[in-house]
Image 1 (tube, rainbow, N blue to C red):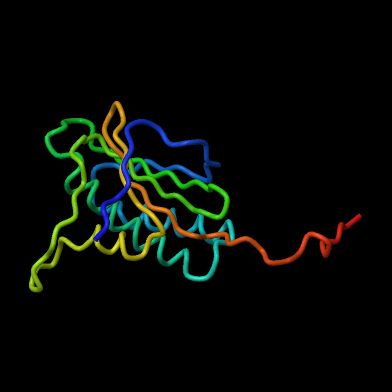
Image 2 (cartoon, rainbow, N blue to C red; image 1 turned 60 degrees about the vertical axis):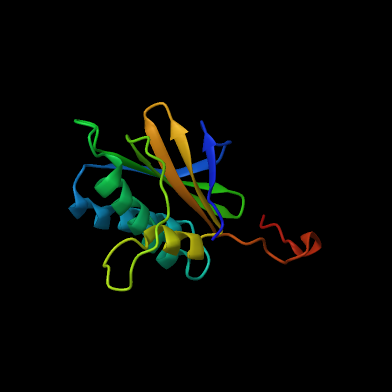
Length: 158
């Protein structure tokens, strides 16, 4: 498996489509999933993007709530940001822990440990960033492919 991309600091400019904070409570993962799915649907993302974005958000938000806020009293909330960079949808999940995410190999009988492998399989790209107050784990999906219509065929409505 290829290593994920990672950077220290903030990413370049992307259009922010939405942002949500959830408390340190695993019951709130469903809310995070719906939030990202609704943004993908509202912004007319392609085909299966809403479903895939929902699944990958669930994996990353679960990791953030289960592993990301450990031993950081009072800083257990998680922020989910959804942005658009041209044809790409970027979902960023921030938590207050600076521990770097790592992929593990789950045994066949284990019920967990496959989240990042799922993210790597389904995302166009994924990675993590370190920030002053913790880290973010992100993924990108090709949500808005360019149209194949030649510019000469565009009609203006007056």
